[in-house]
Each structure stands twice: as C-alpha cells, then as structure tokens.
Length: 478
Image (cartoon, rainbow, N blue to C red; front, side):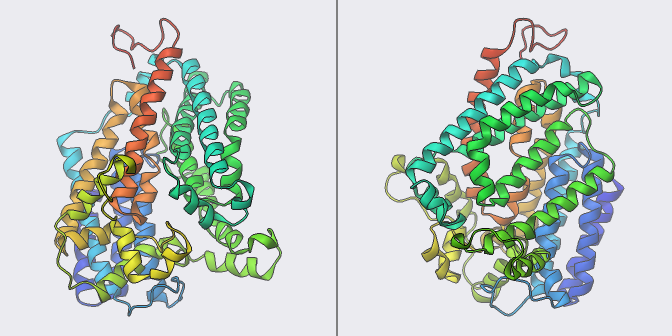
C-alpha cells in the first residue's frame, strides 16, 4: 500500500510542476513515481515476473524516454517529429495517466485481494506435462506452416530481401493473413510452462527438457529464421517475455538478482543492434564493422531515437497541430472493435483506425512507403483525443482494473487455461504503449482467443487418463 501512496503523491507533484512549466522537476518526479508504482505491482502481483510489473516497466520506458531526450538536449527523436516541443504538456498527461493506472490497480486489488504466493505451485499436480509438451510442439509446427504460406504468398525470398517494412506491409495486405506469430506466442507459452513444470518437479532445471527444446526450436525454425533476418524486434521481445515469465511460473522473480540484470542489459542492447542492422541496405548485406553500423548502434543507445520516443513525439505533434479539434468521446475505441471482424464479412469499408488516420494527416510520407509503416502511436494520445485532459486518468483507471483482472488469472482453478492465457497476452504489456486500442488489444485478442480454443482442444485430446484433474476435485478439468 505504501508504494501506491508514494506513486500517487509523486504523480500529483509531477502534474503540478509540469503545469508550472518545470519540465525537469516533473520528469524526475514522474520517473520516481514509475519506480514506486513498479514496487507496488511487485508486492501485489507475482513479483517482477508479472504482467503488471512488465506493463509498468514499459509504461516508464515509453513515457520517459522522449521527454528525457528533450530535457537533456540530445536531439534523438526521429525527424518526423517537427512541431515545437511541449514537454510540459506531455508530462502533465503522463503523470495523470500514471495516477489513474495506480488508482485502477489499487481498486482492483482492494476489491479482489491478491492470491497467495504458493497458489500456482500448489496446483501444479493437476497439469499433464506430456500433453502440454505435445500441444506446444503441434502449435510450433502450425505457426511455421502459417508463416510458410504467408511467405510464399508475398513473393518468397525476393520480398524478404527488400527488408522488414516491405515484407511486413505485403503480409499485412494479404487477404486472410494467417496469424503465425499469435500461434507462436501460445506455443512458446505452452513450452515455457512445460519447462517450469519440469523445473518445479525436479527441484532444478531438468536436463530432460533439452531434447524437447531442440525439437521445439526446430519446428519453429521456419518462423524463427525470417524473424531474426528481418530483426523484428517486437516479436523477439514477445517471445523473450513469454519465456521469461513462463519458465518462472511456479517461482516468480521477487528480487532483482544478477540474472535479471543481465536480461535487462541484453534487452536494452537489443534495440541499438536491431536499429543498426536495419540501417544496412539489403543489397549490401550485414557488415558489423562498417562506420554506418557503428554510428547507428551508438545512436540507438538513446531509447528516444527509436520507438520509445514515439508516444512523446506523436502526442506533441497532435497537441501542437490538432488539439483544438472536437473530442471523439470514445468513437476511436468503438471503431477499434471493427478489426476483430474479417474484412470480407464487413459491409462496406471498415472505419479507419485512429493510428493510421493520424499518420496520414501528420506524416503522409509514411503511407507511401508501406501500408503499415508509421512513426508509432500512443494510448495516452488516444485517451486525450477521445476525452481530453481529464479523461486521461479515467481511461487509465480502466486499464488498471483490466490489469488487476489479468493478475487474477494466476489464482484461477483451471490452471492450464489460465496460465496459457496469462502468458499469451504478455506481449501486450509492451506493444500497448506504442499502438492504438484496436490493433494492440482487439485484433490480437480476437486471434488469440481462436488459437487458445485450438490449444485447449489439443491439450484435452492429448491428456493421459488420470491426469489434468485437480487433486480432490475429480470432474473439474484444468
């Protein structure tokens, strides 16, 4: 409770100092408030390996990186963000959003107390590890098969050589694109839970997971290889998050040890490596020793130079250029529901999503490069577009309540279904902060629901007799 009070107090102070145009003080205050909020989540959720904690880490990174770049005068934001800087306005709304988020979490955990720390471990005996592994392998094969079909449909190797933007754009433009990555998220979640079970039952990391691990990686290779070749950062981070939390499912991380520090440093260095690699022209190949690669790597060490500066840049552009427009009063959220419906079933043309609408109005050059290319977006901006300044904390209260619900999955009776759902939505803890509601939540959520049905059907078909029932509660499958 104490960290929550500190976070709320610091958020209020940050909002007040931002309103007084004391950007440096407001930035320091909101940064400290993010740390306090993280400690609050760590105490009330499954430590640092929880959806709530990871969500708050990325909230801080995406929120603070851009203003920090401006306050320090680093000039790292992408050239598309040309409007005069209103760092004070962004920090005011960021502080209000954090206050709403902490308030929502506080309300959620007050209404539904956190589950006991041993809740998941006490029910591990109800899980059939063999069926879990086979389902994971089957989904890995399905994800790769989907990617092979997409790969062939967009032109194969020739399109792959044109780079990430072109390849992703052509895949996105396909009619009935197969959701290879969403399937892979569920597959990685299932395999990670299998590893966690093996570790928990053996008291250590069991060597018997090596052969299944090699088989899993082999089945996923047709998706893994092009992902690494195109340096698709979000998808790689998604797999890492799922694997990290999944393998720690029965032993959550509650202390910042050397392993967690190494993982954090590795994730931080991944961003400049990806940036520098993408900067190399496809025809030139990968030259790690080139001057251009080194320059881009150094530039990428500043998070604001990449997507972490996107929420600040987009909010600033809209606030300077378009803030006098009428409020949308929730219309962009309603329009976001349309992405769950396949295009051929929608009568007429679907309503445009707010991220692409703003892209086409403020950065028209992006749409010419690729149908999905953009300078990112921001849920903070979407809340502001719909409800104005005081609607921002209200929207984030709802987000906090939703995160509280997600954390309750760790105490659910149906262990496998709850665990796989929890792990599979982890990528949203990162992508949410740079996307609009429809693409980040509704689109992924709709595909994820369908894949989860397939997974649960596979798991129950493969489950051995006498397994998958909670001890003492026969007739209630996981």
